[in-house]
Amino acid sequence: MRTLRYSLVCSECDAAYQPNEVVYRCKKCDGLLTIRYEEEISKSRILSFWKKRPLSVWRYVELLPINNPDKIVSLGEGGTSLNKCARLAGDVGLKEVYVKNEGENPTGSFKDRGMTVGVTKALELGIKRVACASTGNTSASLAAYAAKAGLECIVLIPSGKVAFGKLVQAIIYGARVIQVRGNFDEALKIVEGLCLTHPIYLLNSINPYRLEGQKTIAFEIWDQLDHKVPDKVIVPVGNAGNISAIWKGFKELYSIGLADKLPEMIGVQAEGAAPIANLVKKGLKEIEFVDSPETVATAIRIGSPVNWKKAAKAIKESGGTAETVSDDEILKAQRLLAQREGIFTEPAGAASIAGLIKLREIDLIDRDELTVCISTGHGLKDPEIVLKQFPKPIEIEADIKALMKILSTTD
Ligand SMILES: *Cc1c(COP(=O)(O)O)cnc(C)c1O
Ligand SMILES: [Zn+2]
Image 1 (cartoon, rainbow, N blue to C red):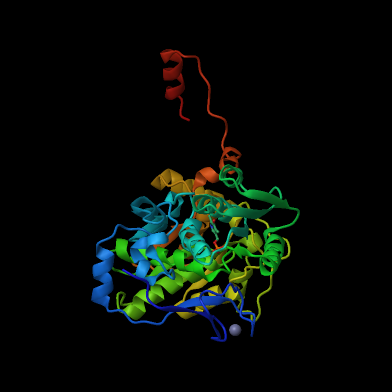
Image 2: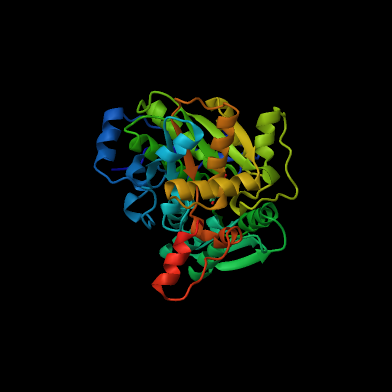
């Protein structure tokens, strides 16, 4: 078992870089970098390797850019369930809807798929300190993987705008947590500056190794659908790394000949933080960043998504689209998914469900189209938003008569 030969190239001008060079943006054009596999592997050989391993990020190690598979930093990421949601499908009038529950990852979001690869890479590069800016889940995930690897971890978060559970995670895993008076975009700018001038490894989604881990969402969906590719994949979009990564995953399956088609990629953003959805829907030439992004879905409260070019390309190439949803629609979708399907997702994760509902209403998804929604993070990360919406549970004396009386009323 070994990884295919790979190179590090600019996603815009194709300039090549050494895989052991610490570089995040192209020195010629400032474009973001991507990993390209330079070796061919036959469909049957790769399948015979994959068949022997459990569903997980590392099932697909041949297509992950690491040098020594014996030295990976893992907490058991990936292998999340793909739930067939018959009741949700009935509600929206579709034949088949699946929800990929990324909340099942070790720290409760898909970020773990990226961090297992990114932190493994940090060790390979001999780096001692890692850092990120985060709306919450990136910091929770990086803090955990850094702890496992014995690395020092620095995280910058927008002051007061991170869900409670995520903040608690970063703290307990021992990260150095720094609150920035500003939004995520501003925090990312300063942490990128820090990492460019110090031997600190940046693990935001501009890091191409992280996205390689995240592309395994596509591999797992294909595996869980018995080697079928869905017609539509709906993804909540913030900094836009994940939708780009999932698209890359499907394209790799296709180019090896493991998949016979590609899905349409649909990005969903919150109305108050929707530069990519606006770009796609209005057909703008240049993106218009949002200076003060606002939404209850704090994980996608991002106004200047660094991966916007990759994401716009993924949506266009795939023949997909993008949509915006309001905070009300997000919270309604969050309740619906919990109460109809037993899946508790955080608000950002519910954006894909809200998007599904909206796209059905405007008939952009056909009844027969096999659709997969990504639920990106666990609902327990943000309990406050739920408590705000529901009345306090009723209280009674410890007496069966009192209980019977309550139960005989209608609500
Ligand atoms: C990070 C995150 C997103 C956004 O992913 P991007 O790659 O930044 O687009 C969406 N939902 C949750 C729960 C996240 O943690
Ligand atoms: Zn370039």
